[in-house]
Amino acid sequence: MKKNPYLSFSLAAGLAVSTSGAQASYEQPAEPPQQVLPFNVFATKAPTNKNKAKDGIVTLGANHDSVPGAPGANDDASVTAVTLELACVMKDLPTNMEMRFITFGAEELGLIGSRYYVSQLSEEEKDRFVGYFNMDMVGSRDASDLVINTPDGNENIVSRIKIWFLFAYFITIPCNEVSRRHRSSRNLDVGCKLDFDGDQIETFFLFTVFLLRNLALWMLD
Image (cartoon, rainbow, N blue to C red):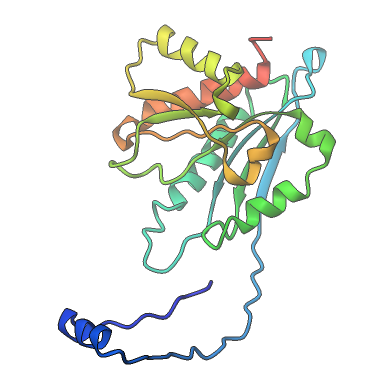
């Protein structure tokens, strides 16, 4: 990771240097390049309803790495745990689409793991993506509201199921819909991200299971 050098001194000293016309220089010793070897962990669930099987792919992902000084238990071990639990819940539910549960490595170093994963997808796979869920720091009480992002802000099956769910269960989670793409998958035209307030984790989990299952069943053809 590139680190920029810096110097710290008082305002008075800074003003004295800036008005004196003096020039200063700093040389940073070069550091040897570091090799990063991240690992992506993923599990694939094939369609279980063979008579109604679709070609679509529904994916849920997160990063499993952290950095020194960061609250690693929350950023992002919390979502790694949620991803594993969702995979356990979804494995016995009938689905018509392929489901992928992924945790990416080296996200904190510049989305290295997810960028590599997307770069290895075939054009056929990219065309099959229906929705991608990217979660981050779900164990925090100061997280943002529930947000669903769709490519270019256009309505799609994700946003329609969201409306149905919130109406059917009389959920009043602060929710808004904006145009944004998870950076590594923005060209797949399936941008979708979920954020939520930490004290609404049960509703979030129920919502995610519901949304994933119905996406995989393609109930809104």
